[in-house]
Image (cartoon, rainbow, N blue to C red):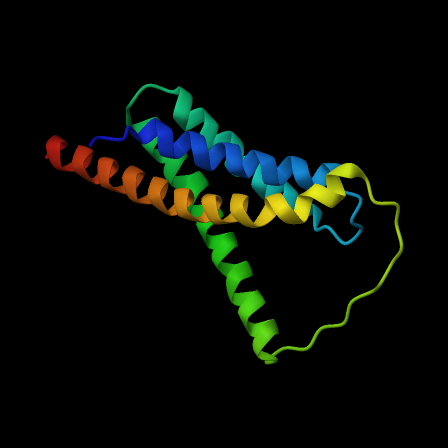
Length: 140
């Protein structure tokens, strides 16, 4: 069964777009703004790669977007594991804020979307790398 590369790029781009929009709609206060910018840029790169015709530009956009997403998601997974193991201690602030309807739904939606984002960013990285590599072989 053949699954087109556009499918991987589109799903990864939509998941990154949800993550960027969720950070803007949430009332949680300790959001990192540079991370939101990274999600926006990676989402735009992957959605542009899903729209463009097959070629070197499409593969480059997809590889850049999925590589950045995979790197950041891997970093946050390692950070979470290190915090859970107790190797790094952190302190947080407890703040009261009015929770919106989206804030109540967000914990339910975030884990499946982040899992899909990690899987499809890895898949799109592999697809774009293999198609770019096969394109280089045919040019030689």
